[in-house]
Length: 127
Image (cartoon, rainbow, N blue to C red; front, side):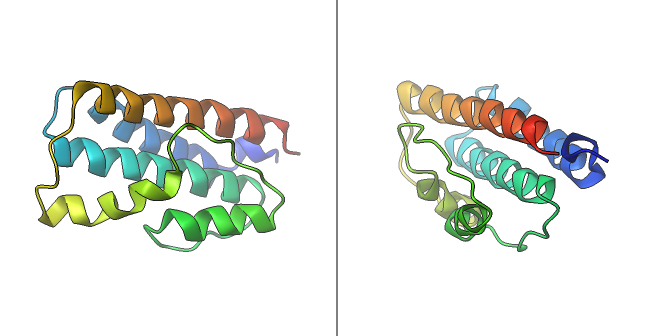
């Protein structure tokens, strides 16, 4: 079975796409931040699973990046440190946070889209 055929990878791509669908709409700021974090988390976990490894059940993006680094993956710079989004996995559920400007919303959406493209390409290249 190829990495792309791995059922867990496919499920994580589907679940990440659901989060990405939410952020395409003019949802409240905290909802957008939460779903951005969730999409990033699931994409990173998909890449870990594509390597045939088990990922940690965490919302901490740094933990996932560290695990990917140990697997030899180098995640590109998307203009915003992915670790910045960790706090949105919990904070956005219980705090209002600072209001987002439209350019921030677009930038967050772009980070998710670019990470998705990168992860899909990496998964396709794995045996």
